Amino acid sequence: MSIVVEHDKRRYDILEKALDVFVEEGFEDVTYQKIADRCGITRTTLYIYFKNKKDIFNFSIKQFLSVLEETIAKIRTTSGLSHTEKLTQVLTVIIERIEENRRLLSVVLNYLFQMAKGDYDADDRVRRRTVRMRRTLAAMYLEGMRDGEFTSRLKLKDANELLYSFVEAAIFRMVVLRRSSVQELKDAVKLAVQRFAAEKP
Image (tube, rainbow, N blue to C red; front, top):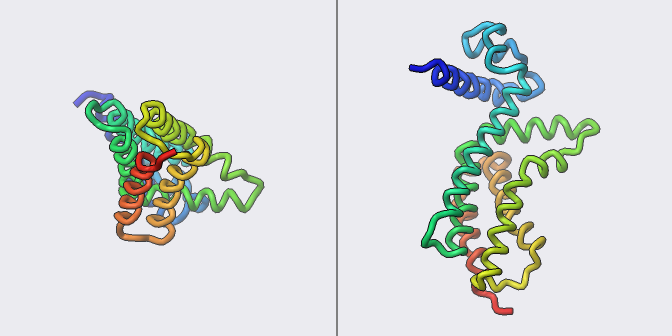
């Protein structure tokens, strides 16, 4: 196995074990030493892979978002799908990834709650992290409008808020309410997107 592949595998293992520590203790109470201990390595070895616990935390979020963005890009470039099908698939995939990554998102929410106790603008931080996703949903809505498939009378801003609210609802249901499934939300996505095509101006 090449050194690069081995390095990447070790980084992934560290991320998985660090996530366990974050979930168990909350972001604030986790120390770099606790992560090293859980991984069975020294702090010096851990520094080879990450600078500090925030670096580990940020890398986990970046990895989650980059994998999600790759999947979304594939759906958007799939030929033979209508705009309704593409938008429905993209939102469904986002919801499914949230379901699969509920542990990471529980740590993110814990972190945001802790930061909100101080002088910290959580809304601004979340918006900056999700700006590409919001833009993608808006672009997909506009493409459907441009091609005459979506005939909704919703303004772009309102449509975008509606679409993104499914993402926020999925996070709330999975992480805060600890629902075992988000199937009802996926069904609601399908109905909402179909309405874009069903409404007449």
